[in-house]
Image 1 (tube, rainbow, N blue to C red):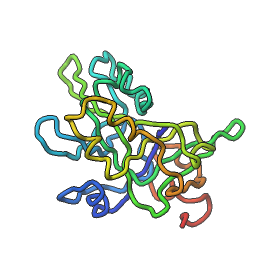
Image 2 (image 1 turned 180 degrees about the vertical axis):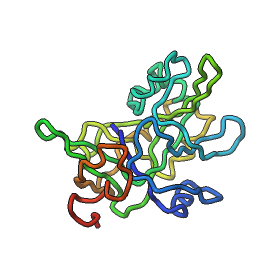
Image 3 (image 1 turned 90 degrees about the vertical axis):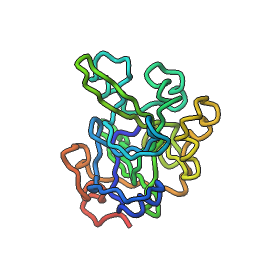
Image 4 (image 1 turned 120 degrees about the vertical axis):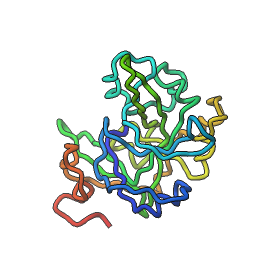
Length: 228
């Protein structure tokens, strides 16, 4: 699964990755947690352009009666999302990208879990494949939310967890975001584990367990300098 991640990349590399005409103004985040606002790139539902927005992490299906369901919808299994009632409409009509530069996975050791930080070896940013949804409450309140798609783990993640987020290559962004592609068939091949040789994982302190802690110490080796 993907339950915490980071986005502390400088604006210029992020704008280059997402092919943005202007650089976004963002505060570095080292412990992004569910229910918080997260940065999303999506095709605009009103205009033929892409837009960068902040959506709440934890998808609320449009038909949900209680928005509290979002806490259970931070991830969607890529193998079944196109068919599940909670995600199938978004899978066909509302796909998005969530930029990141690392994420955390917890490895069970006996009765405890040890957090690990996963990133690209060269430190470059990347994107998760995501879905977004628009929910309107009885009082007219509108909430836009999102979820991160997951897949089976690659060889690096497998010792840590039985799922990992779907990470898309830049060459696949256009297909994933294309609102004209409604058939799941051409996009299913994108939902695969990322190549492990380009990634690195290392243990970090349990400081990251609390979302109140959101600083560079979250990604440091305990008691040591940041990982090179």
